[in-house]
Length: 363
Image 1: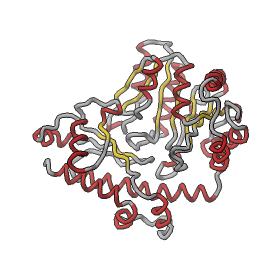
Image 2 (image 1 turned 180 degrees about the vertical axis):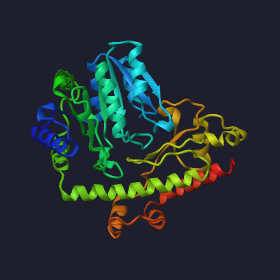
Image 3 (image 1 turned 60 degrees about the vertical axis):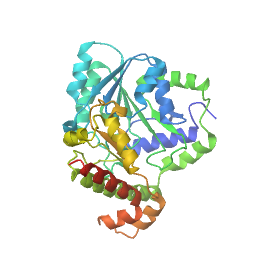
Image 4 (image 1 turned 90 degrees about the vertical axis):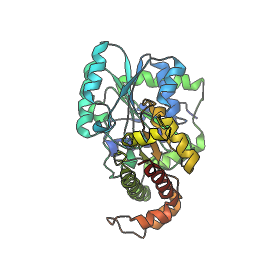
């Protein structure tokens, strides 16, 4: 197969992104790889510069940079800012060393928080990035799982300096298929060519059956749109239900905009947790697993301080096919109630109950 990807697939990807996200691109701007993770690694390998990561952030960004030997700048974000980077933070960083080459990763909706970036803030970040010639890697792999179907991309706001990243695993429910997509601005075509040169000497090309299947996915159609609409309904209802349950314990947590993650902060329960000998986020998660069987990841895995009582919850431990069949009986526009969630997403609801009951024993 061609190193850069099947031509028919690159055409489908370009058409998909022009029509859905307003990204002005052609098939020659598209690079296909065996998962977006591999493409991110190759990008850092061929582009010499710092990697700027707003934290909390997905767990693989920083380790990839360390493997290659790139300098990492972690920028701590805050709940009051939706756990996302502010343009002021980016401006302050760029002023520290003017002209230094940098790649800034933006991930929205976010893993681990489920929050997205407002259009207003995206525009402000784009202005700062343009001013300082920062290369943006816009990781939008959860974009089509925005719960309201209202995802907006930064690419049209800073088209000359933004690389779009996505894949099949999340929005298409194709975890393990290992197909990633990068869309480059024409000004950065040299990066695409450099990455494909390295690809030809490493993985060679992406699996042919996966690429042919992906053509159908990116061509879209009424059946895929309906699947996305119903998936969003279930995930939205489940995310909001778990959010409400967590808040009753005293935890601080923002409701998700998309994807299937929550990032609660249990710091309001710090004194009671400390009384039980729990003084760090990792200790909290280890004790929770040992005493309830509920598995969550501490915020420290995502770049947060170990003494912060944040954690990431992923709420997808249920039979998706069964839930999608059942939701067909609920008219569009009608809310999904707790009875539905307990019947068809029972493991997640039970996990939330166990977690919250365990937390409430600390009060």
